[in-house]
Image (cartoon, rainbow, N blue to C red):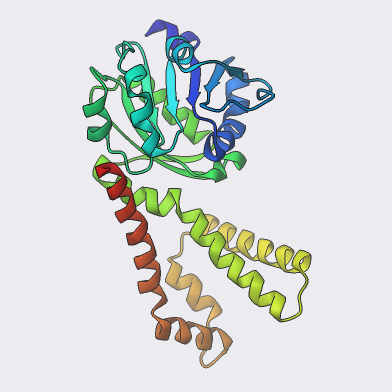
Length: 269
């Protein structure tokens, strides 16, 4: 593995929203380590993306040391023939495919040795992704170290068992969209109360930034942080009681379970 230790290349198979956000976050490290980056798309963008080499899939699989699958889960079957021509002894496959387990992928690709399943999110663009990954036991340490460094450069990256990856997909891959939906509802409510869009967005942004900063910098439990704001018979208590009445925690749990179950369905399809 001397070649990949000294210099290596990364190929993105597919370059949709998540891949674009990852590339934006990875770029400083790529430039620092002189990593060459290729991408292949079924329907190439015109013109090609600056600083990226647009190639066909066969060329990408030949030239890349680390191959990142950033396609839709159902598209895996469309490229299996090409993936099965690769000598995986000297290359690592990194899958971003929601719901596709290590066992599912490895059962479809002949002699896959180095395989890592990763679930980041679009906050990687601003180096704030919560990324979780699992890997085949046969995956060489050099690839694990490389992926760990890459994804820690765009936030926090932690390893888990593959059996927990569907849940992590729901929590951390899809999770931002659920929070955005909550914020959209909050902004809609403020609009009904007479706030203009720019003002409401500024206020909500600062609220979320303050909450995230507090949680990140204090070791207190979440319940302690709530108690510091809540006073007996006050406005906060009234709102929290309505949350309890609406069983908000159960609603949130059902949201994550629905996303997790869909990930499982994707693996079975």
